Length: 244
Image 1 (cartoon, helix red, strand yellow):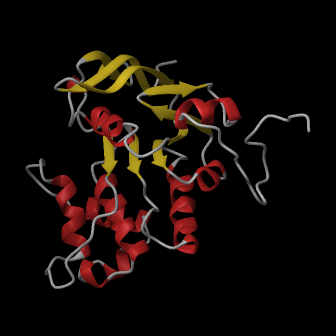
Image 2: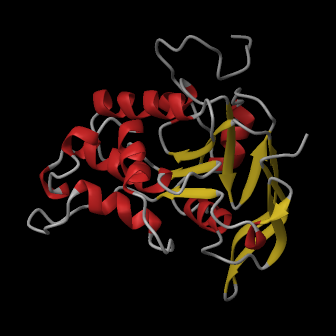
């Protein structure tokens, strides 16, 4: 079976600063991976490298068996929450349309289908500046979906919205995951562990055991200090059993 994503020996450097080092990862189609790590750990850089925005210093990335540069349009990217100027006169429809900026012809039905996916079709003519934080996040997801990507990357999609709204965003992502491979980065260990299928830890290098379980050792290696993880009400184990 062809892997949705194959990363081999990936390194990214800015001048003399190494941001990502020897990243290796393989994901099957329709996987839902959550990546956690501290500030400055390279999470955003990894996502931008997966889109082709940032070029690796070493290594390669394959998307469905082809090098990413030769397979455009397969990856959709939702950046960290963007603030919209309240008075800026741009509609929900026009923001989503921006996701088709490289297309010579724009099919209205494609834009409306993307808005249906995120349940915003009924407010397509509303100004984005008038929306709630959760609605704005859904607009950004629709903008990424409009090009019909097979892989969706999201950078801290719930960092600027309240927990209740964040839960609705995760529910939407679970629905999209039925047909789309998803990689999501977040600081919220407890929240993403409730929704994703597998979890990796990133701090320049990637620690991935091809499972949903997070061990204390993984966290301490990633955050470079002892970590006590307290989880309330989670229906699954995110730490190994240990003796008291």
